[in-house]
Image 1 (tube, one colour):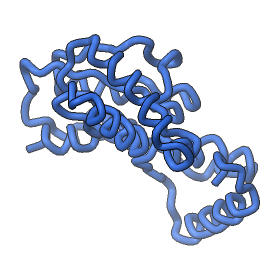
Image 2 (cartoon, rainbow, N blue to C red):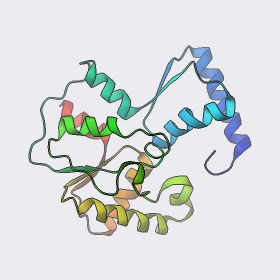
Image 3 (spheres, rainbow, N blue to C red):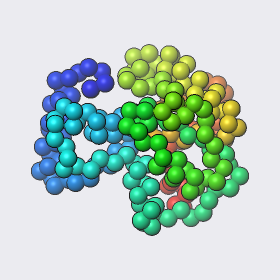
Length: 195
């Protein structure tokens, strides 16, 4: 709602969420979506002026935290499979979360390779800011550029941490005849790795 300029509805939704979270005694919020993370982490403090009583974590940060605490155990590394990672705009460039997804992937896949440009210079997959809903054809075309950059790494699997990136990159991968064997979310990778 913030991203598409629906300010009044966005503020109403934010105020409702903050009120409910406080009533429920919520201290930590974990979000799977990079856009939701950005909204809770950056937009809510900007628009409400007060979210210091909540810890906001993206799922990649939470998974890394659980791994560090020994609460999430990987059954074994996946050998002989090359993997690369797409930085979602809202998680990476907007919020500076680059390392947790990579550290989780490296713990599972020893043959992790970066696609370029990467991190704060990574290109958008094409789905952000309502683009996929507004102009799906253009969004997929932008996604094919990321698929081609990823394939230059000779990786078999492309991983992302955003459901919008995931959907658009899958569509782009399909439109190019599936050069990646899989386009998957980090949570799915972890689920498999846990057995």
